[in-house]
Image (cartoon, rainbow, N blue to C red; front, side, top):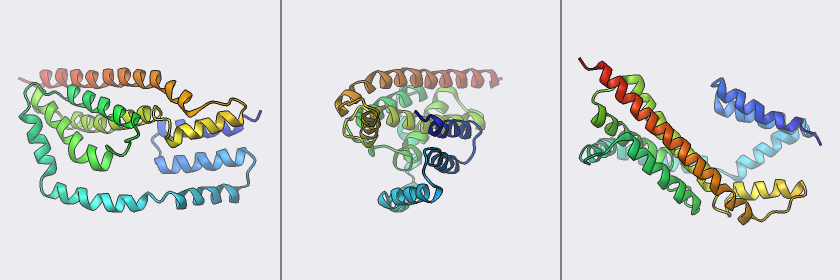
Length: 227
């Protein structure tokens, strides 16, 4: 069995660890995987171009961005912050943990587009998490504020990534099924989906701990900064 195509995974891991441009990392990994699998470079590029042409998500982006921009212009983020500030007992940890649960459950039911960075995180979840952190701990340093915004984005990623595989009709499950079937392991999409549940539970526990750890850390920093 030829294991060289798996080098593409190492390229992705190394590229993300070194914080290279994600698009460049993915393209290089795809080219390397195709070439190491025995395809010529032109065939790999043709496959990438065909996949991009068949899945023209860029047009959806052009529709979403003006709408989000218009909503933000008329104070959507400010209203989101005001809502959180009016909720008694609201904390960043509680808010993001609930959003993580919501994102996983909806993705598990196939509603993976109900959240997302442009339509949910930037205009709503991130400013609400920031407002909750300020409400709980007072003014926080700029670098910690950026970490709150990053954690809001990461929460959406984790919830979607580990929740969508529970839905047996998702493209990723069908891809996994095809890979296993080509290797001689016939599995149904439902079997794969069931075994995605323990992974999703572990992801929820681990990321929930990370959210709470960040909230506690901000509390300690804000407390030590007070006179």
